[in-house]
Length: 265
Image 1: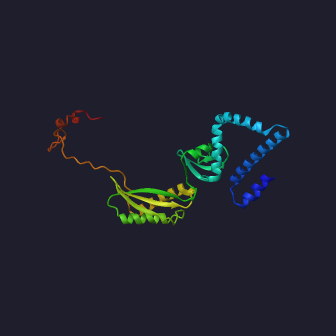
Image 2: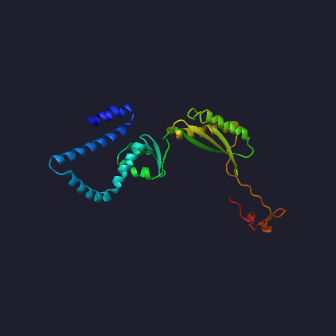
Image 3: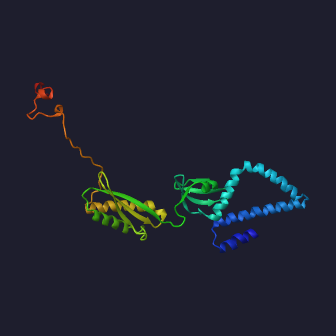
């Protein structure tokens, strides 16, 4: 009854998330079972003090064998109360992106973008570096590099890129989009369009839409998207590769005279 009142009344009023309420309820459940177990032993006439000494000695041995389990359990409590990650957050762990689906007392369940469920020990989320992309905001920044040909109007390129960003409804108005002229490349004038996407889930679609819009706008405006080019300058040429100024004869080319062969019938 106390567990139900705690989960459905007290924690709901404080707007505690569902999985946090469930974990706190399980903690109280185990606590009451442990207290009830001690009361049952006391009722049977077993002295609690002697049992405590025996359990302490046994706990040392068990502690070494279950060190990882205890570590994950304590890490689960840290995750529940400090909340560095929450259910629904998008995290990046060891180069893999996933969404938090459930936070348990021993392990956390995440789902990758390939719809694969992974069980991650809580200690890994505490001891390893984890990037949480949606902890404080679901906005995310996109950087789109664009290279145009030398001779292009820099101001016109900047205005065109800015217009492409402002025309997309998924691009945030604040922070405002930016166009930066970063570098004189080997074959291109290097620009970057930097925008913030309103919702993290739409980042791939927004990137694709901006690519389409930039390509259409550049083609309509006559702006050339450059590609790598190389100019070859010959300063000296060996005499052996120079062609004679007069008309080359068959002997000079060291080729057979095809006129001596019979013509096909």
